[in-house]
Image (cartoon, rainbow, N blue to C red; front, side):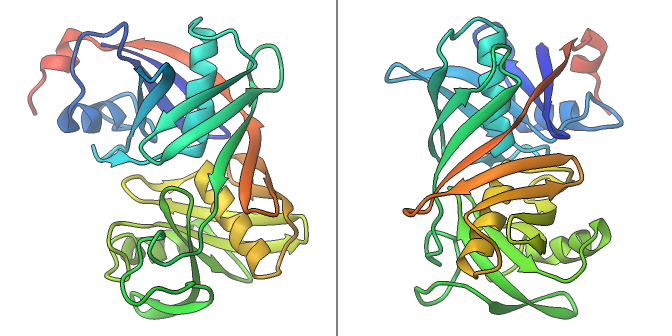
Length: 281
């Protein structure tokens, strides 16, 4: 069982090439491999490439073994892997996910800088996975733990809850995320971002991802936060999103389609040992 490790501004993923590996990934194995103490450690696993109607497809797994609909940094990482492994020589390609198709474009020769067309933002409560009457959930009061917050919810093919704040920190988002991830406000688990607006073209976020926990960066979270900031009039449509792991450039057009640009780096190749694969705790 072999993996290749990459990161997109600190958001690290393992690529599991299903064309080259024969072993099966299941929930237990995913949890073992992603564990940062007993395994390799990562924010998730990208399994592929699968071929669907002549296009590349990828499955995204969270460290808890659950399957995500999409991952912004994960998509860029997988595109970089496809280039590195010789699966594509094209400047542009489509990658299919459970959350929809994403078009990516390599901006330099080695594929370390990639732009992804992430599709349309939706502020529909139904698409964002909120319970209750159909609505736009903007500035809606929600209670997570002992406190209430002004929350705006948006879908990027997955569900996000964005909370603007004057000051943000890892401790704050982890405290909120412990309650918000599995809150009854949502039909399924939710990704949570707390957001500080620096100026009209710069915002800062801290992230708690469903099935992952605290992360240094997230592509779909950056798109969601930028979309909420623009929708609320707090920022322009062209914004740099600052995260502990680095920055992503987000551009939103008049139809609420989002383009995301950022860097990807290869880290290492990994082959799991027989001891690891057969170990029973």
